[in-house]
Image 1 (cartoon, rainbow, N blue to C red):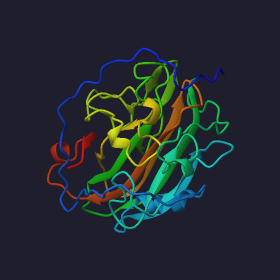
Image 2: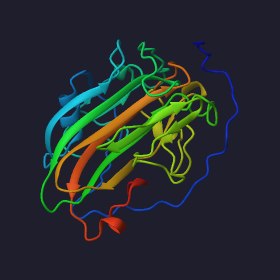
Image 3: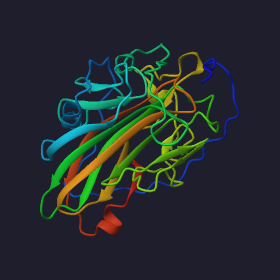
Image 4: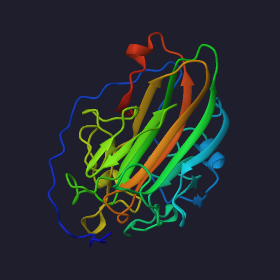
Length: 284
């Protein structure tokens, strides 16, 4: 696998802005916190990260890593404000394809190879798949959470094969990579064009360097960017379920990406088909 210089220019495509579908969930609120220097604690304990992501009203029955790079410290928990997080409670989870401790270091380049080979297909590297087991109470019919995707691949590798991505799935995790393609039939955090939220993602306000302010993805030396604060929702039934949250490098294991995760909630809406539509939206 050839490691490429971070400053190399490749073909890019223009990000198109698309209409956003609001997720209206009774009793679920999405908030904003101004970015300041964060305190991040690396952790390989899935339950610790899952509990940081979940609201106190959610019953987390267990958690595990379905996939984790063999070395490094890609994931962890933060307990102070960064990039609009935390949203609910005092902590939130961070998954990366590199070193989680580098996330809160503006003016640096986040690029760490954790030695993670292909897990799903032939072009995914440094893969983390967090599985969160939870019990949905009677009457609840909508699962939501907030996230923010950040990447050093932006903007130079937009439209290229280096398409790092984030995927969220309920009960079935079967995303795959093949060449420059990502297939994720059960992903419910898709963008306005029904694709995974990634470096190549369109809509959702697009990735910008400004949205990465306060992080290593702040556009320093023309590298790095982030989405705005996003929300994702999917209908759910009562009983036991598993939420799968995945992040990975695509094409090679350099130039890292990250996802901030918080405010995992279970709520009740009048009509899940209209009030809890799958897909990512900008959080107000």
